[in-house]
Every structure is written in C-alpha cells, then in structure tokens.
Length: 173
Image (tube, rainbow, N blue to C red; front, side, top):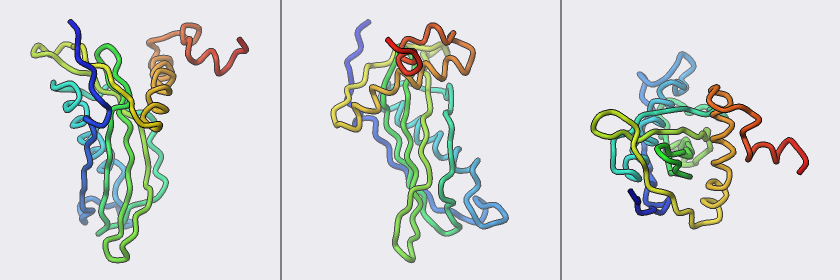
C-alpha cells in the first residue's frame, strides 16, 4: 500500500485557550497538567489531519516549563508533524503565553510527542510520509530519527548498539 506524502504545513494546528481560575494552582499559574492536556489535544488534531485516522499518544518527551502562564492570560499552542515513520508520527509543540492587557507574548515551553495511527480494529496502521519544505521543517525532520532512537532506547525497545543515528554522536567514525 503506497501512501501519498503530505507537506508538514498541512498538519499545522494552532489552538488558543484562556487561563481561567479552575486551570490554575495556588500561585495563580496555569497547572502543568492542564497545559499537557491541551497540548495532547492539539498534537492529536495535527496527527489526525496528517493521517486521516484516529490516533493515540505513544510517548511524550521532556516538557520543561520555562515561563509560567498566569491566570487571565491566553495560551497559544502550535502543533506540527515533523516526521512520520511506519505507523507513528512525531509532533513538535510550541507554547506561548500572552498577556492580553499588557499585550505581549512570551515563550512558555516546547516539546515533542509521538502518536500512532489506528485502523478500525484498534491496531496500528501505516501513515503517509512527511514532506519537509522550510529550513526549520528540514532541521526538525532530520533530527526526528535521532529523537526516535533515543525514545526507543529509553523505553527499552531498542538496544543502544542498534541506534545507528546516535552512534555518530558518541563514537568516532
């Protein structure tokens, strides 16, 4: 079965949320779990746009919270597919906060997530390849294989000795 490649930009999802009192902790900051929930939704939507199928979260890479997002601020989430493998897709997430009164934006965090496409029986199914066009898309695409191998090693699904892309980082050729 041959799947038609799709441009990375075709998967772009931009989501906006307002931080309300129920979304915050005792310091008036957006709770990390709530942000991760919103990020998971945006990433799943990007994947579904790419593969036209239901998807499930397979992994979440490190999420570092650089700047807290305050009560009353706006959250902007951008999700885009960086690369597709056989049945999985890596998604790059960027998050900004925005103070609507003072009218400035600030970076909150970024992360990578991996999703798997499902067939009607709940089994993994093939996904279309990604076409990276911009310089940034190409850079993310090229790094995706290394990030995938690292995820597989950390998840116990690959032996470090089998990670060909990572060997170049640690061993002289």
